[in-house]
Length: 144
Ligand code: FES
Image: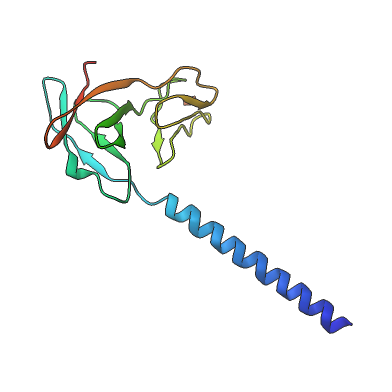
């Protein structure tokens, strides 16, 4: 009887361990670094080559020396992109970008990839820039 009990106990421990490893692997893959592109700007327009997007990710960080905060560029479809200023609307701190949304480590606000608030204390959506598509580029208008 004791052997059977030990066997069940060891099996359950092994199962919990395997489930834990699976969850960890999933979390690590979602924490993979996102591409960061240094976008050149002219007259407030940042140009991002469309080929910068890979099959692996529909989001990237666009960095520009003229801006105090990075831009999260989201590919919604081949003809639809969203450009969000990565500045928390609660108290103006920088945001972190994941494949699923943006997060503020200061007080826990979160935003979806459309810029809508999903977790307070922030109450206002993120600043969104207009985008335009050319043959080979996405143009982000930082004056919009
Ligand atoms: S500054 Fe982002 S949640 Fe407060």
